[in-house]
Length: 405
Image (tube, rainbow, N blue to C red; front, side, top):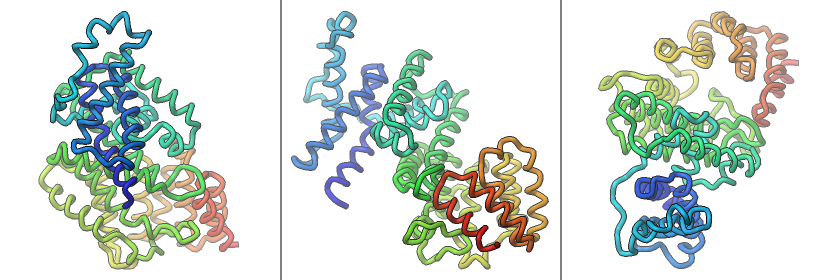
């Protein structure tokens, strides 16, 4: 790892801690978040050349606090703030509180008052430490568009009177589920990009795993937090084997398992082992268990499909939805034959939620090919290829259709 990369990793780790200190101190999320970003930029410019300070967190808190004070001294804020600004400015020698407000910050960024795209953007900006330009590139939108989205999200939090604190006990479960969902969406977008020239975005999967680790450190006893982290690790372990040297997609059944990351698999399985049976089972734990069955099979032919099918049946009871049914159809096909899988798949044809994804047609094509209905499979592959905007997936599906011509 280069020195610059080490500094970048450190800044991303410290970003939520510093922002938490400032928001608790000054109670103005928008101003504090901008100030922290300024401090991170300054650190990224100076630390690689001058060396990392002895107390980097304190350095960032001081730099960001000065930026907040400067903003309050501006023309816009002078009338309201100038009388108190001196008292609010912390002396250089005063160390910041050691309290870690990362969890409160995550919950604020994922507040249900915000639409999901804004939760994603604000989480990556405030907790992940990514710049607006980086987030815009990740979601393939212009930087100006992403800047407006982030600015609007801050304004929505302010207008709703959202406080920087842990929610009441009655809201805890629901709010934590929003956080987990946002991290899951970030990881999913990185693992298989919605569109673009690359199948996957390692920067997004890496950031999602980092934030999930942070959440697990803050709430180590929560089974679903551990389950989500395990799911990410067990899934990301296959990343290197998912594409060829030229970026072409390699399906799970054809992947070289010697390329899988055994350390991540072991960590994910250990997390899951410590969790299952000790807390109520939730959807992320079940998905992690399915990923573990895949990862622990020596080869595709040794995969325990009946066990995977049983896990999908349990998942459908806990968190029913078309995506779960789609995956269960594959498990049914592998355990009981392709025609049985196609019968399950047929139950999704009238589901409007599947009209905007190519995955239903892609799975249908695969099962039709396994059933020997090659003409129907070819047409389904072609339909799926037209529906996806991810180029490696599009090339893969087009090639499968061509092979059946």
